[in-house]
Length: 227
Image (cartoon, rainbow, N blue to C red; front, side):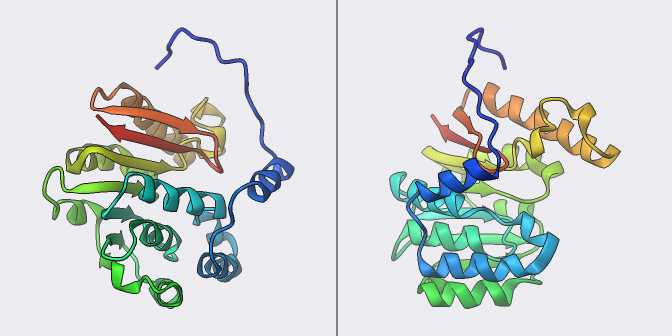
């Protein structure tokens, strides 16, 4: 993965930096902020949710591509699907999938509030089954925020579906920094997860079909554009 170019500008972002970044980012709409507030009441599980800045970025990316069909792997409370739906605009479509529909009522409530429910198609079941339903080159954007051990499989399945210029966006690629040295992870399971994500990150960077950049946003976000 190394380029031979030394990057000496590293930022260790604490809560104060995170707050500053949020303050300097265009805030999402009321539906997004309301969903973030409601999901924040879930306790530890709320940590699985994307941040407000990530939601703003997803909406922006969908508009820039521009995306008419986006696939959201890992629905949870519906935040990323909502952000993407705002980005694809009227007439666009977001297919979001999850192995659980536990939080679907919460998600749908806020999709309705945002006026984008008609753009979102929820699929219950494995992401591989959802991805298999698309034709190669038919998808504009794929956002991955689900089972980390399955990221290599999502990479293999998603890239052929993207049209040239389409985006593969992956969350949690830094995994609390453990990807730098998986041996520092707290448990064997976390170590295996860090090793898997480290391999995924290397594969994305080496994939000749993609141009990729990793951003130290939240827990790490990679944006890869299909050539």
